[in-house]
Image (cartoon, rainbow, N blue to C red; front, side, top):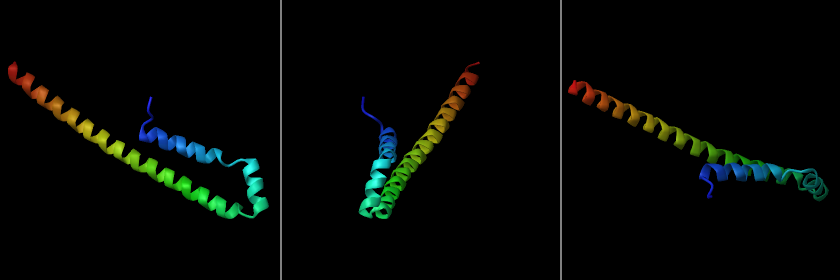
Amino acid sequence: MKKSKYESRFSELKELICDVNENELKDQVERGTVISTALSWRNAIEKKISEIEMITEKLERENIGLKQTNLNQKEKLEKYFNGIK
């Protein structure tokens, strides 16, 4: 089954987090690249978080729209059935 955009962003975020491990950190310290690597890693994480925030905002807007549509339909039905009595 295909993952949604939302689920795939969380998977990508989890993968980035799993990239930080003891062996990787030791290697970065030995090569003297721990700071640049940490900054790159931070930027990648911030990007994924931003993508998730945008998807979340879109889902919230869609949910509000669906709730309003549901209320509108409910009002129409109530008016219709109240008019029949």
